[in-house]
Amino acid sequence: MLNAVSTLLLLYAVFTVHEYAHAWVADRLGDPTPRRHGRLTLNPLNHLDFWGSLALPLAVLLVSRGAFVLAYARPVRIRRVAFSEPRTGLALVGAAGPVVNLLVGLGAAVVWRFALLPLTFLPYGSAIEWLADGCGMFGVLSLFVGLLNLIPLPPADGSRIVQLWMPDRVAAWYLSNGVWITIGLVAMFLALWLLIGFDPLEWLIDTAIWPLYDFLYDI
Image 1 (tube, rainbow, N blue to C red):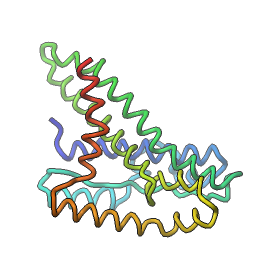
Image 2: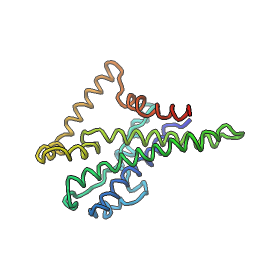
Image 3: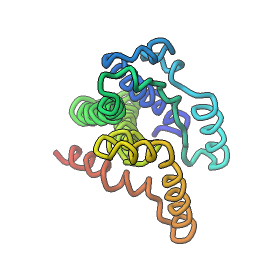
Image 4: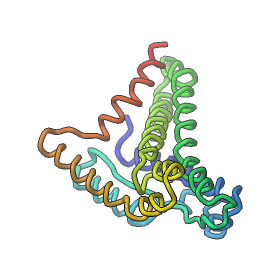
């Protein structure tokens, strides 16, 4: 089984793919900002944030005694005015990260089930079992990050997608101030967790990700 530190390292890989997808699409649409900031790379060090990728997860690991981990990466900076269609470009860049995460997660799930899992039953398959666990967890984390970022609330990438269908002034306000809606919802979910034990993140994994793995496992 993978421990919390291994999970954090896999999460770094998921973040790297996610942020690289943002940078690549922005670059292809004519914005050189990600390239100038060194984000057009799969080197994890270029995408991780000291506070969000190291200090925060280490603190959470210590407080939870290794029970869970929480982290985030450094967002890719873009200039919407560099796009021929700023709002469309923003939506495409926003969609790139979660879409790639979902595709990679599905690919990892298929590799886990049909390439690695059958080999764990061979003699001396412990090393392959460790690799299968890593591939499976990478797939779970990829799907989780992808689905989480499709939530249409700032600062999640979904907010960049839904703004495409809003009037200009509403979209501008939403992208600038919608984070307060998110803070309110987070506070509400935290209250629900403290009062009745409802964890929305665990619910997301249980209802949208584990069923896929259960289905693949039963094939």
